[in-house]
Image (cartoon, rainbow, N blue to C red; front, side, top):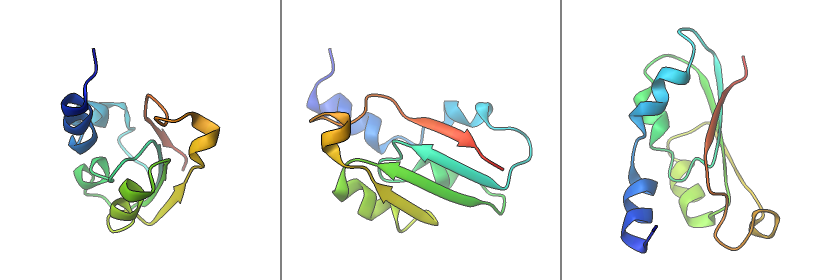
Length: 91
């Protein structure tokens, strides 16, 4: 069962296990459900990094780490926001 503490730990994680899903070369990344943008800190290559996040407070923090962050309307994804994040290589 997910509780408030486990949600906080998950949301603050850098999610290093996701790094292996990226190709060896990329120039653009879109992360859906970027939370505070911690995953972007794992990447050390020059790239364009965009995020989508339903939580305005988290998105504001992510904006300091990413090129562009779009705030998704929470009514489109439910009261608690989306359940899973996705990282896409778009270029």
